[in-house]
Structure formats: C-alpha cells, structure tokens
Amino acid sequence: MDKLDLKKLAKELNLSPSSVSRALRDSHEISSETKERVKALAAKWGYQPNPHASSLRQSKSKAIAVIVPEIQNNFFAQVINGVEEVAKEKGYHVLIYLTHEDNLRENEILNLLRNGRVDGIMISVSNTTTDFEHLEACRISGMPLVFFDRVYENIKVPRITSDDEEASFKATEVLIKRGCKKIAFLTLSDNLSICKRRNSGYERALAKHHMLDMKHTVECGMDDELNREKIRELLRGDQKPDGIFAAIEKFAVNTYEVCKELHVVIPTQLKVISFSNLSAAALFDPPLSAIVQPAYEIGKKSTDVLFKIIEKKVLLPNDKKISISSTIIERKSTSK
Image (cartoon, rainbow, N blue to C red):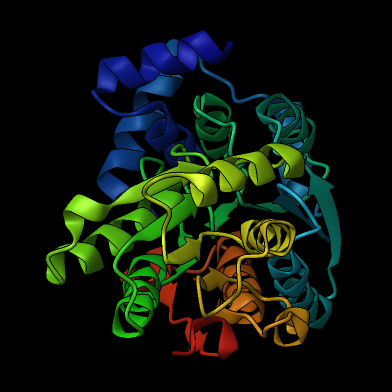
C-alpha cells in the first residue's frame, strides 16, 4: 500500500496522516484508543507499512544530522559545538549539511536523510524557504526532527530559539536611550521566523517611545555589495538615520565598511548595534555593541530534545518550545 493509501486510511479515521503513521509505530504520543482504531482499520484494509523503511528506522545509524544555512556566521559554529558535546556523550556522530540559503538544496538534503542515513535531524531553515511541505513530509515519515533558531511554527515539532523579540526590543531601546531619533533596521528575508520576531521587537520599542512613524526597515541579503549599496543609499538620503540596528552581524560589517567609505563617524554621527556572536566584535573600530545569542546552549538543548525523541522518551510541554535568553553587550558603537 503506498503513501496515497496512508492518506485514505487517515481520512477514513478523521486523523492526520502523521497521527496514523505514529499510531502504527506504537508512538507514545498517540493514545491507546487511537492506536487500536488505526490498527483495526489497517488490518481490515490489509495495510502493511513499508518493511524497508521500518528496518532502516530500527537499525540505528548512530549519527544525527545538523542542517544549517551557512557556516560563515559564527552563531552556527557555536551551535554545532554544543551539538557535538551532547552527541559525543551519547556515542553518536554528527553530520553537518549546508543549504547555502537554497531551499532546493534544503529539500534535497532532507530527501536524502529520510532514507535512514541518520537517526534524527536538527534544522535551521533557509531564508529562501517558503514552501514547507518537505519538512512536513519529513515529520510524517517518522524521522525525529527538531527546529532551532530559524523555525517553522506550523509544524508541530520541538522548536528551540533565543528570545529574539525581547532582545530586539531591548537593543532598539539602547539606541533610543543614547539619543537616536531615526533608527533603521537592517533585516534579512521576511520569510524567516527570526526576522519576524526581531522586527516585532524593533517595532514594539518604537511604539513604546512614540517613534513608530520613524520606522525604516531595509531588507538586505547575502550579497555584500548589494547590501553596501543599500546602506549607501540609506546614509546619503534626506532622511538618513542616526542609528542602525542590524539583524545579523554581516549587515553590521557592511555598515562599518560603508561608514568608512563615506567618512561617517561611529558613534558620533551614527550609532550601531547588531545581533552578533563574533568574538571579534570587540575589535571593531569602534568596538561593536552586540546582542549575543546563547548559541552553544541552543545547540546542547536542541540535541538533548532530539535524543529524547530518538530514545522514545516522553516530551514534556516545556520541551516543545524553548526560548533561551540572549545578552546585550554595550560597547563604543552606541556610546554618547
């Protein structure tokens, strides 16, 4: 019986395909009553789960996969360090896959991994991902799956993040309290959960201080020269800002480059703050004020939760959605 028949089975029982799949695998997430209903109808219809897929799931690979959009960002390197620590204690290897912010590559990687190559997957989604069917298909297949940092809220798997909205709110307030009246927010794709949360915090801080009419959001990307051109236009414009809040550290670097080119003095003429896990942020000229995410802790916690799923332990409600607080370090880039 193929995948279409599984959907028919689910439709007949008024359940989701994923619930039927978990019931057939005797998952602890499904009630005994539902399991009996599913198995009774499956027996009546002669349904047999794919034995090849089942054997792959039962044969442990002793490896987990971490899928990240890039490795240039120091945040993901620190996450992987946290993952490695927990995996090593469990006797597991860690396979690292890069999507390079390409949703097609992300899809290909997940399709590759669903065949039993690994025992579980952790993923931070690409900024070009707008269709999440491949992630839902991964969940339905029974592959243990955990989102971290860049998550998709509508798929019911554990999600481990930092407190992006609250950290963004506090960072915007740092600029406001240092006298900034026109604060520009340099963001990545609106598709990303982290950008939505960070933009929400930025807007909430402006609203609190009655500055929402001065909101100025600039969508940047992975091309440094295009980013620099957008920042040049911003700083040469009639409504040039006196503060810049960068959603990722790459945009802070681009801002410093343009300021040097245009002879804009930080922090006298422009104050800058950014999400950044770069240890070198203190060596910028002037040193960069930064929101430092708990990347290592996110890596450890995400891996802890993934192993609970792999080992079929019961997840508590507070394992399903975890937010870990970031830290703001103020340096000379936001001084008066």
